[in-house]
Length: 399
Image (cartoon, rainbow, N blue to C red; front, side, top):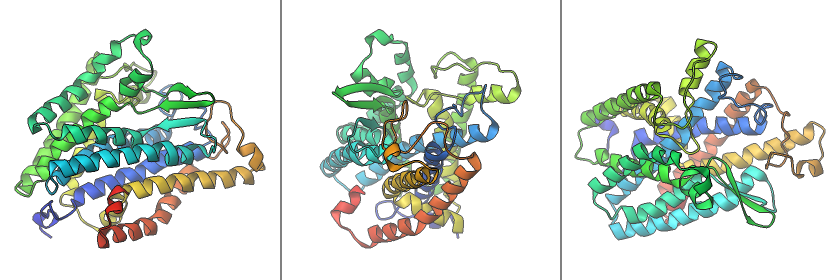
């Protein structure tokens, strides 16, 4: 198959490489959540702490860093591709409605999937919330000139770490929502808290750049030029990360330090801030992602076709995998001799029901559960993907 066979006009067809990359990060993402629910040390040890971690634990956590930034970047790209077949008014209205829908899903469905707490004593604002609020704002931003969106996106991504110097005495709920995040807790009603994990400003900048990158998928763009541009940009971001991280002055609030051995020093060097995502975090995740995106331009085989199925229905997969993991966690909790009543009690420091710090399984078992779950989800994702392809119901565009 020739290179151009993969690249159909975007106004009528999905972009195969995007579906594969999105599917890959969705599969990897599930590994991190499987670790949260089943690993014995999930709530007792930081897998990225150079002083206490090991190579397998560090790798398991580090590779999942790619998921949120890649997903948000590609969400921005998808918005641009939609702009090729929708008017500004149509797209703006769609983004506003879908963004609000995603926020509602995050607060109601995904919070419950995490906690299994019917009282909703805590609401969690994570990646779906970030995508939702960014989509609402993109509904306004897409009306601006393309060049202005590009400049503003670059300014946010490269400049938002300047805000790290603002003292904590000047921070609060709205600041946590905008920039700080970092698992900040705020009481919104007696007995009900909200925790902000994904502040939206840096993610908005990344979505804006994703939107601007969609321009290279216009039908008039030469596929060879696009592949070369993705390779060069991805490599450039990795080199920029190495240089800026080595200087150790700007780009991440957590400086790297020399450790007792080379492996631990490498761990420290790579351990960049995700909550909120620093400039260096976005460079080391988006850089390799662009290289993979370039490689997937001309790679189509049985494995990538399977992976692309997950990438065509990411929202469906995302919600389903949470409920499968937590339900299995509940059954295994009871199988270890605990009662259902014990499972629904508050556990100090853990807002998730049927979880106790220090209980769980080895990392090998975690990987086994992850693999089996991903395999089990494939036929469901294939069914839903086929349904979306065959039917054009308006509500399917919100799933």
